[in-house]
Amino acid sequence: MMRSILACLLCGALLCAQTQAPDPKWDRLYPNAEVLQLMRDYEKAYPGWVKLESLGKTSAGGDTWLLTITNPKTGTAETKPAVYIDGSTHANEIQGTETTLYTVNFVLKNYGKLPRVTEFLDRATLYVIPMMNVDSRERWFSQASNPNFPRTLPVPIDDDRDGLMDEDGFEDLDGDGEITMMRKKVALGQGTHKLDPKDSRLLVPVRQDELGDYIQLGTEGIDNDGDGQVNEDPYGYVDPNRVWGDGFQPRYVQAGASEYPLQYPEARNIAEWMGSHLNVNVVMSYHNFGKLILRMPGARSQKPMSQVDLRVHDFLGKEGEKMLPGYRYVWVAPVLGDSYGSSADHTYGRVGAFSIGIELNAPQQDFNGDKTVSPDEVMKFNDELTQGRMFVDWKGYKHPQYGDIEIGGFRHDTGRPPEGFLSVEEYHRNAMYVIYHGYHLPRLKIEEPTVVKVKNGLYRLHIPVLNDRMIPSVAGIVQQNKIHRQDLATISGAKVLSSGIVDDPYLNKVRLQEHRPERLLVSGGVDGVSTKTLMFLIEGAPGRVTFTYDSIKAGKLSKEIVLP
Ligand SMILES: [Ca+2]
Ligand SMILES: [Ca+2]
Ligand SMILES: [Ca+2]
Ligand SMILES: [Ca+2]
Ligand SMILES: [Zn+2]
Image 1 (cartoon, rainbow, N blue to C red):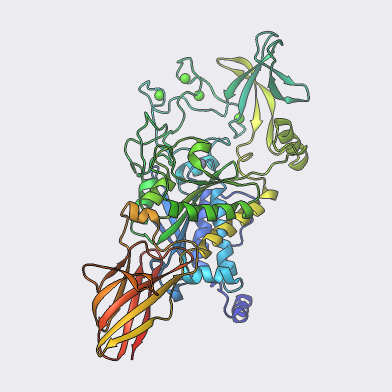
Image 2 (image 1 turned 45 degrees about the vertical axis):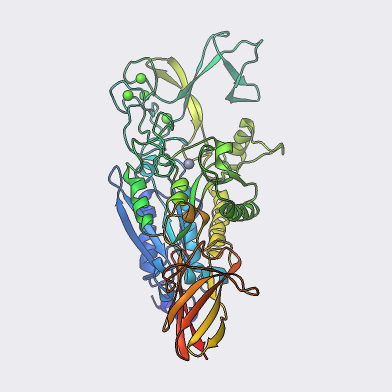
């Protein structure tokens, strides 16, 4: 205690933890209960700066936990432009959660030490939902799982339409806690594969002119319902990234869709909350894998993104390629195929936030430098850099349908999340990319106005409003979809006779607002890295008036102006 008080006296302008701040280790993954404890501990250690709340219950009784982080002394969270990040939409894409926690930890521990972090929490808000698909993420840890399972919402669906739901899932037949793979040795000539001559743990397909003696039997499990298919209807399948409102399509178009948009609380909780938190300018959702920065729209049939928004996305995306080496910034639809009802489409189209999905990387080694990681290179990585941690070796099993088989393969926590010794760099670079977006949140400043006394009691003001960061105060999509009102400029302390937006101050070209000049709506707000000058013709006495610029996405600011 004495030591922490002393530390507090010494830290001056730093953000001091009131209790021992959590100090997570980044070389391992955190089960849900530990994630929740970390969130509680951050809230306790940084009272006022960190708020933890549940946005509501989820499909299987969990909570949508939200962290709100900002400097409370510089304004409340909702009054500031915000970056929102989330992880584990796909429950098996685990380390999105740890990536968000690393970001939380970094900004709290470095406030007052690093200028950009300090600026971020002073003028902006960071919203974090570490575990979107919280119930299935818990199941990934607590029950037998694999790198691809469970993935979807915890909602039973009759995948094979036999009248039963989730009746034939995967099984951990050998009871090792992992759902791995099955293979079977057969008589020569009856197989499709053979053992890889370089590594007998791997199978290779036989050539056209070659006889095989192995068959692949897929994921570990049996035919539970005797319908002649193995594992045809496992737990799930509603995809939490195909259930959102904007661009939604039903299941006959989009596999994994819900019956109607926002049917399930995992998405609805967030959509409802964000619908009343339109200060969110940026949404970053962590997935894996593939080293991609994905921009919307999700499908080629959707309306293309406006040029003004595309320019901003392209700028931030290209910077991302530099900060995250090996990542590619791409339009999702032509690269990963058309998808409908994704969260990024929703938060862009309905909230007006620049929204990207990030496919995180699990670095493994391309030993021979041919730019691909082949199965035998994965094995070499497993053997030499993890001492065999990743792979469960094949062993014999008597299967009720297939007879004598072998069971083996990769553990559930391999391949998609980085190995512990490689995770920090991934988390760190991604956290810095979040702060980079925070830096480019719109930052408005009211510049020195020009005041012209037309005659006694009549003044013409030209007031420049500067945005010195890349993200506009009103995105193109906000205008296009009429998501919320435009920025609003007002003068108090005088009567406004006329107002408008100045197109050319030298030639006095002004677009006048026809009605209610006292309430100037600034169409399109202030673009990134630009100035918009506003004109007010006012009737008043010498003295002071107050100009106020009120932006839903960029905050509210005022300036006193002296009338001579
Ligand atoms: Ca079924
Ligand atoms: Ca097993
Ligand atoms: Ca079956
Ligand atoms: Ca089964
Ligand atoms: Zn995903």
